[in-house]
Structures are given as structure tokens and as C-alpha cells.
Image 1: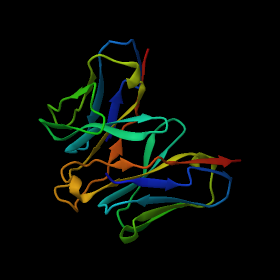
Image 2: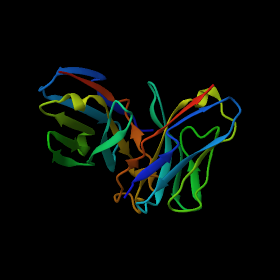
Image 3: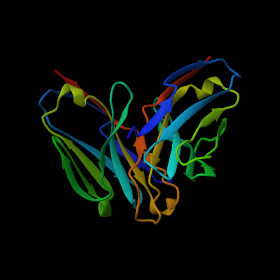
Image 4: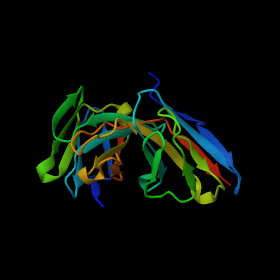
Length: 112
Length: 117
């Protein structure tokens, strides 16, 4: 099956700093999503981005499908950004099964 | 729209007991699924359904049953709970792809934390 690797596994930053989280995947995908799991365990949709670039406030994401990676940028970090960030992908041959394969996540801790 | 609703949020069982985790969505999504999340293992697919009356197994289906009698509901049943089933369970739904390049964004419920003693 497809392999999804996220880096770095852990990141500790001061409030106000910027960060880049990376997701590499081993096969062609037709769906890529970024999620934020907050300290209460909720999975929050950040981006649905199989290709291209999207921005939402302080967050933006870029997926380069031909090179099999995606980047999540967080600018001017706030303590509420703390949590685990997951990348998840779907391969085209999973037609009819919308299964997402998840990476193991990047744990982000923002220090006041 | 309430989105994806899971109940209960917390449950403690004894080994051998049975229970059902409920999942309902009000977005008219064809696709529904159950994942479990364990420390260091990420999220793994248990079962999924592409429409009413159709279910199939994911990566880790053993010990779990599902059914899909309506578009809205997709319950997950533990027939005889084991300590290895202690986990956080997430239900998720999306529109169905309908084609290899027409895929839907997946939305998750808030999770159900299950402890089996």
C-alpha cells in the first residue's frame, strides 16, 4: 500500500514563529487532506488539496502531486495551533472506497 | 447541519461485553467509515460503506461488525469486547468518488473513547 511520511515528527516553537510541515507519499494520489487534531482529540479539516496551493488565514498548503509531496505552512503561530497535524491521502485505484491513508503526524507545541 | 455525530463519547466495558457505537451524518454522504486511533499507530480503517446495504472491511476489521440500513446511520458493533479494542474510534463520511478523479472531502465525528477492562 501507499506509504505516507510526515516530518518532522515533533516541533516546538515560540509563539509568533513560522513553521513548515512536510508530507511525502509513495504513489500517485487523487485526494490529499490536512487535519489538525487538537488537544481535545477533535480532528479538524484544514485543507482538501490534491494539487496546487490554498490559503486560509495564517495557514496555507501546497501539494506538488508530480513530486509526491505536500507542505503545510503555519505563520505567526499561536498557542491554539498546538496539537498533531496529519496528512492523509487516497490513491486512484481505491475507486469506490474513499479510504484515506494517514501519516503518523507532526506534533506541534507552541510555547507562549 | 450537525455534520457527523458519534455517541457515546466515552464508554468503559468489561472483557466479553458487547456494545454499539453510533454514527449519524446529515450531509447525505454516500460513503461512511470507521477508524480507530491508537498511540503510535495513527488512524486505521476498520470498516466502510459506499451506500445503504453495502459494507466492506478495512485494514483492521476483526472483532467488529457493521451494517448500513440507511444513508444516515453507520453503527459499529463490538460483539465481545477485548482489551486490545481499547482505543479512540472515529466515524467519517464523504460524498462518494463516482470516478477515480472525482473524490470527496472526508469529515470526521468527534470520536468515541472506549476502554475495555
